[in-house]
Image (cartoon, rainbow, N blue to C red; front, side, top):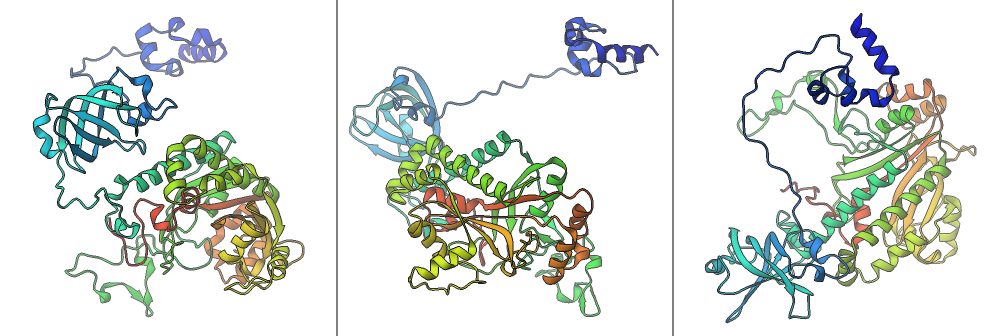
Length: 535
């Protein structure tokens, strides 16, 4: 009774009474448990003796090269200060009385030029300071005598942590093709191009979370293994334990359980066919039906046997879902998101973006500024078809109402017809879109949209989802999809259905768009494509 009374008093007490200083229990217990634990019915127990041990050291953030050289003064404010750099040797130039070692720690494009003399501690290891070697360098930042950088590091001590054989290290100072670098994907982030791609990719991911979190969305982790096909395309990877590798040489075909000439999936791990997901959208809709606005950001997979520069077997998707929303809300969200992340990298990745503008795609910064600053325009699919036919331009793929737009059509619309403005095409024929898209009143089109940008074409695809049960069931039948497999998805329309919308953005496409990289295999650390799952 006394414990219950104390609990009721604490719920009514002002915040100051709940602090450890005014605790109902002795101070040591209050400090260790916190006020939320005061209502426990059991009385406090005397602390038992604990074994002693050494305390864990304090975590300290290391100073990176980007923090020294990344400011507007390019490091001059650090002159006279001691600095320790840990990184990898890019080049080593030995002269008669001095040696220059360029060290990069991955934090930025710039190297730290380290100046060594015969008096430097560790100078006897100079023969081991080769391209690719890892080193620890200590010294004092000084004004540079050269014209390529504002500061140098006058080295007092250098330690070679890991040697690198200069005769076999595959990445030398000379430029290497991106095709070759894909064969050494474990080392390619040490190059200027792929280091910059990795940093911009990281910034885009950070900006993505910032945008949705700042706008009240909740991040949901959608499953990687699924029993449903979101797109209805059937291009999925199976997940199974029926293919045992215990036998020498791999699984024996006659060891796969079968029934009536077919694989007996009831004996598989999930007791039914299971796949790697192609989208987190359907699962995202379930949480949007309870939490209002959510987004997923995770890996997706497609078993499409395509070797183009635009396709991967494993890629990442950003998929927000907005409850109580229609297609107009969806387009507004997609536009705001894209402009936010583009502005973020332009403001926070200036050195890397200058590199891309110089060495990868001339004018990329202007192109991105156009997207960040220009108003997005929208037009119907029907009007887009009329525009393309009226252009009198010869396209490789035919233009006809009812056919999907190809990349050449999309790029013409955004680059030529609208002079670099991002364009949203909406209201597509229902026959070329997925089953879950809301049917418009005309009975021929669905409330779908594709956001087109210069140089890439379609970057974002979305729609208002079909919230009406009878319409959704009819579309599943038309698409020859088993309604029993979507029973839980249909339930969302039975219990408190609301208008809702969302879109999907292939993250590697966004990285391509933001960096100017031509091949999508260079927009992801370890590309997975037909015939290749290396690294």
